[in-house]
Amino acid sequence: MNLEERLINWARVQSGGGGDGGRDSLVASIYFPGVSGRSVNSALDLVDANRVEVAMRGLMPVDRKLLQMHYVWNKPPFVICRRLGLKVRPTTVFDLALAHARRSLGERLLEPKREFVSMQSIIDRLQSEPHLLRKRNRSSTLRSTI
Image (cartoon, rainbow, N blue to C red):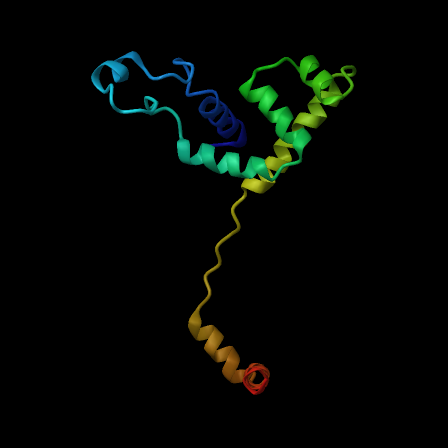
């Protein structure tokens, strides 16, 4: 999924999952009256929405509010600008603020590349550079004497 699809998925999860407005479905309340909870919409990716939510917590408050108002509340740009204290005109102010918020969220959602490290290469490096082992041994002997 690209960032736009992830934000739309996050907004749908935040707003209660679509058509039922966040309430239990009628079928669930009839057949499962003792079970509290919401009906599950299979079109939503809850795991990805949770990742977006965690990344959203690390954003600046203005960026977080802007994304929430734009995607979850579906507010028009001029309302968002007035609420956040941004200039309404020119409209590029809103466009730049939205692009900044998306970019900062995208940076937080990037997963670091996993790197394969061979244990044999580490052993070979330690054997070829014995001074690396000596430094560690000295620090451990210092700790034991203190």
